[in-house]
Image (cartoon, rainbow over all chains, first blue to last red; front, side):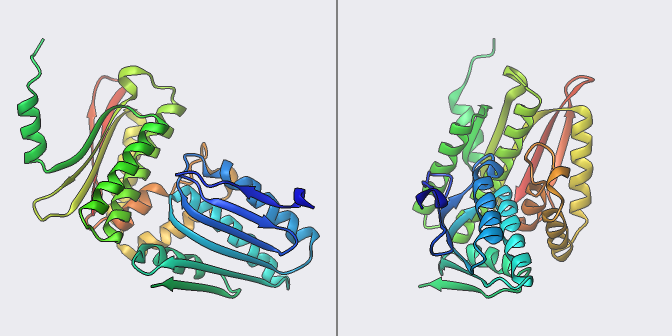
Length: 127
Length: 180
């Protein structure tokens, strides 16, 4: 059912976001520095919350994010905290963050997020 | 009225090694466009991706903080006129500075917060960042995550420096300098 999927188009200051109910994946790609990040990410937070509550299947987070402003960092942390909680309750959770090896700041940011997660979280530098 | 001397203005810009400067009311579109231009310009200068990212990040945090403040307080015209400057210091480090009109009391609160961050080392700043990251949503003010200043202090190579100049009893001009 298409209504169960989320598809937010990329703009110059916001990432492309796709959430697929069937596949159990959430994918975010691009820069994220809108003035109101909470507004941007609320539908994603709601979707993840509903998936974890209703689907009872593994969820995978795929990130190709570049630059994040601090309010986007906060919103992403909220999402990762929900995934962490689901993981401790026994839901299969995994995440991957792919970034360009030349941009080490993205890698450092990803590492900092990973510090607070106990589920499988892969950070891949593309060369 | 004093005659505008573009040449001497330009001399000041050159002497202070100013790469980019904007003075006027910040709008969302304007901030975004200038930010994109800044990024492109730095990439064109073959700067490392890390320094482009750091300068851009501080630029965004400073301008978005000012935007949030002026919108929240419904500041108009002169009071909404803010300044952002990206320059180099004598050692070639990038410096991002910004200034805006604030209520005197807000300025004092901000200055105290910056002074407390200035006393922290990198590990303490990281701990402060993570603690703020976990602040309950309903305790956050006006969609602000409260992370911007800590983030800038973490990226800076020197403690943040601010100044507060009284305009009248009610208002002050607050400025902040971030050396990367």
